[in-house]
Length: 237
Image (cartoon, rainbow, N blue to C red; front, side):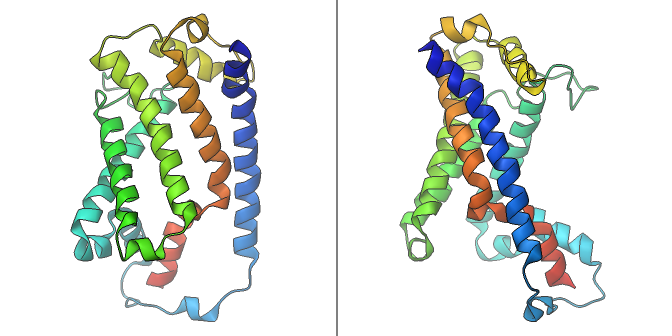
């Protein structure tokens, strides 16, 4: 069991990020190296609008979705806000890194509700694909990615819920910080609690599914997130 834990928590993490970096560079090189499509330069909006400002508005506030699918927009906004808070929380798991250093707060923000909001949003995105017309436009990859991301979030949130809501503190924030910081500096160290705690299987499953998602990401449709702002800028002129 210790060997499996180590393989998932150390070598697989490095492999996942290597595949992610190489895959992302290759994908972007392919996209930007493709011949330009003249029709894509048509301007949908008047030139008088500040293009970059409205491109940012389109990308982050999604006004078109809000107008036509308000419920979907609520879940999208909730998902992106919760995801941002989750990313901040993971960044703060690296020792010495404090995003909100002037504001006293715990790691993670949200007292466990960020993971809950993210989980509910992902379930909404998944189940809406079982109904027409979204079902007719969906492909197997759409379901696989949502399920994979949901499992990643669920097991990560379970660790936070266990610690905050049920007082299960065998694996502490300090243990997570030691683990992640050691990976960052290529001196991997697994705290003893990883092997001794009954809680640790959730960490291993969380990292396992996260590794899979990271490796698949550059080759999936989610890659559009890298291009949202440039594409909206192109539409704005």
